[in-house]
Length: 117
Length: 115
Image (tube, rainbow over all chains, first blue to last red; front, side):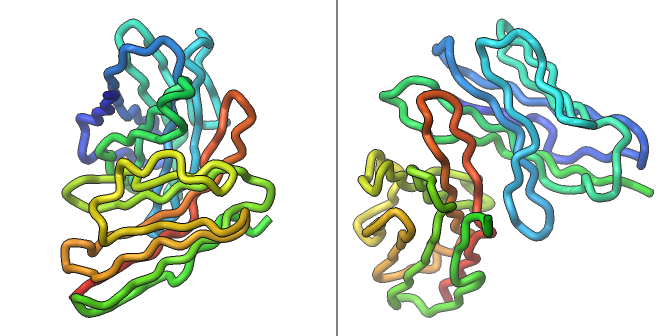
């Protein structure tokens, strides 16, 4: 079974600075997808960014980018020019591309990000 | 689009009572997921449907939990009888499986408290 690990329960960053959240995963599969979701105090789970494992190029979405290291099974999220609205719990998630495994998301434990003004 | 709609937003009930959580997926989506979030276990999949058919219910804790999807626009998760350990936030998510990537869009969740 796949597992996802986020080793940083809490992180903090100054407004306008850059922060990196770590995520590692364990799988024997070669094709899969990785995601970062954001959960603000409103509780809503919001997709931040996704990465296809077969793509070598790291995904970017505006101020959010990932560092995907397939061999190391690492998938970190970098937030540039941090804003107060970025404060939230961030979850790393894995989804298999295999039909038999279905479309379930396996989540990490989460990292609580605080943005200081 | 209004997104995934869950009701109620909050539910407080007493042990032994029946609880029904409701979900309306995004129109056009063909897959629906129920997740549970607790401090102890984090976010875990309970069950998911594809084209209204349950595909994987291995995450359903026990017989007290049941889920239905009578049509493409509605699903329920029922707990009967409820117990204090069922207290959690329950999320519904939907996606459109197109043979490749299928992003799951989440509802706002239902916070369940069983006293």
